[in-house]
Length: 106
Image (cartoon, rainbow, N blue to C red):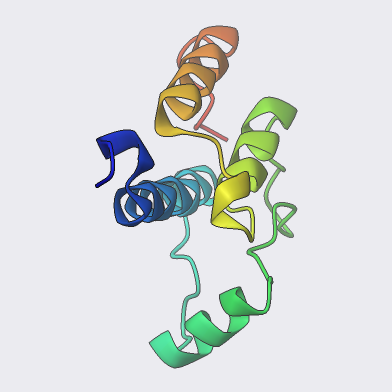
């Protein structure tokens, strides 16, 4: 029926993994729990409306531009607009190389 690469369910699961990684990268950079104090229902509604966590928090520096754009690309509203995990990993390595492996340390 479908090749593995064409399976819509598999493609959707990978897009969810990419989104989840963006939240983990955000959490590592800002050293805070994402969506702290919000119920799961509010988070789902908020994200479903296209809202995202702030990338310029008060009392904390913004992530470097390559990391910031990676996070934004990975949490794109349309799952089809999110990069494939292989490309995400390559971009993480580029960020790590550019910042001597310390790009998640603010």
